[in-house]
Length: 167
Image 1 (tube, rainbow, N blue to C red):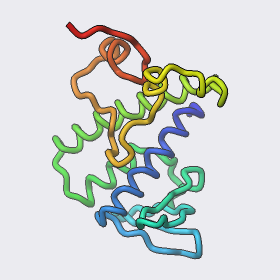
Image 2 (image 1 turned 30 degrees about the horizontal axis):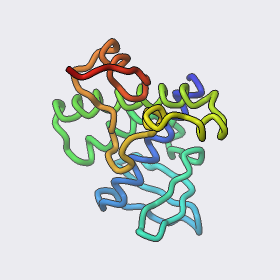
Image 3 (image 1 turned 135 degrees about the vertical axis):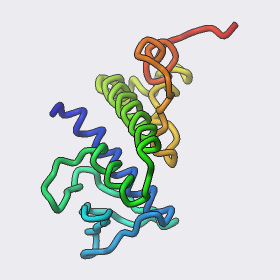
Image 4 (image 1 turned 90 degrees about the vertical axis):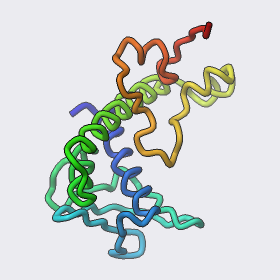
């Protein structure tokens, strides 16, 4: 699996677990001082995290593991979550579409930022800098854009850094 794909998957799983734990949809159990686990049905995710001042779990994506030894993939987390939340097939499919669009957008952002150092970021035009932002931190699948194909994404999605004029 591509290293960037692994990275965006790990970050997405961390975001899913942290946000849904914060919203009390899932429950994190402390294993030790900085080690936690969250069970979803018969699946269990383990990770290192610290709890922030507002109660948010700051999960280190690089420490995520599954007790089954399965790869850390956001698709698996979503399918486990769909079972726990009793989502219909249609709901699961909609979320899966949004998940993959968000992962694709996150990969695009990582690739766009790969070559930028701190000096380059400081000197970016504000509009250009906005195109490199990750999106809303609490909205899990924040790049869903249902119905958009790759051409529309390249033309209009901020992470592709295209410019267009509204008429």
